[in-house]
Image (cartoon, rainbow, N blue to C red; front, top):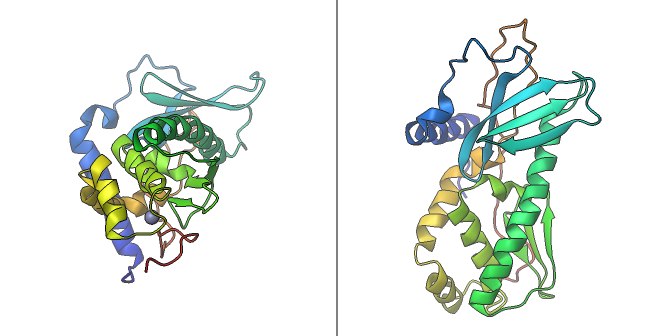
Length: 235
Ligand SMILES: [Zn+2]
């Protein structure tokens, strides 16, 4: 792939966020009602299943354990102390959610494709979205839970179709196309939005007294390759 510079990365993320703003203006409403509890402040946004959701951080020293909840279209992160690693808490939540969601979807798609796999493992890999081994084990990066559901489905079908054709031959793509007729658009989406998906989570605790403003835009690290490493070269 061609090289890119950090400006390209940032502009990709901005474009993606601008698009979300036009699609989902309500998510970006920043005015807070005067009656809102002082301790609960909007502290950033989290990309989840293709949408950016408000994340609010609540400091509660009395809570048993710091935790993340997703309800009423926003994330609520309850922290026991101010030193809590909030991005790590959210990543952990996304990872567990990804595991449940992807396994359920993979089960449905496997039945449709008429294939069987051994294990699905959700990993923290940054260089691959997914991979499939000759032993019929499938891995996915937990980060794909940030993508729209149709793209998650495409990635699942992509890997399951390798259980029929262990290559990227024309026959392989014909199989994918049979279940995902728009697969070329999905591949384009992945190419266009990978930096936004790979971007780190930037959610902070904002003490009520301070007017610090959280931002969602952040530099991401370069990603050279998103192909599967475990597959032999198509011949
Ligand atoms: Zn593949």
